[in-house]
Length: 154
Image 1 (cartoon, rainbow, N blue to C red):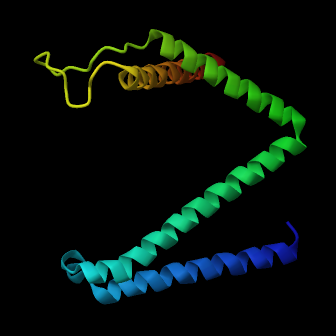
Image 2: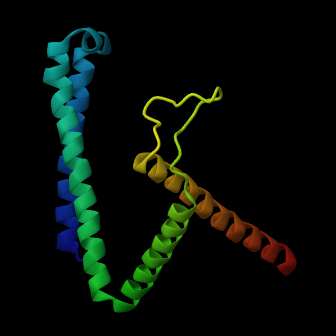
């Protein structure tokens, strides 16, 4: 990165930090007991801070996604590997969906829990639980393979 862009980025980062410091000082000046008890103080002090935090989260997320997409379009080899990874994850999701149950969720006594009725929501919850197990098993398998490989190497 050239020096001019680096300076501009440093100034912008410093400015955003000063805004955060301003909100921090405002919150400290009001005090936590007042903020717990007074709704007007919450609205005047915490609401702008929360709005600023949400703005920063959205802005940084968008910047990260946009620059990632720009980088992917510039480098076709990385784009191919990324698409292969996304396709592999999609295949694993389909496998998890096929093996997922859409039965109602019950407690220990066999009663259907609140919002645990059978149907598509239950199917997707079961799918994502299965998906997590599949990804965890793959990760554990790679970890164990690498561990054994390092033991054999030494």
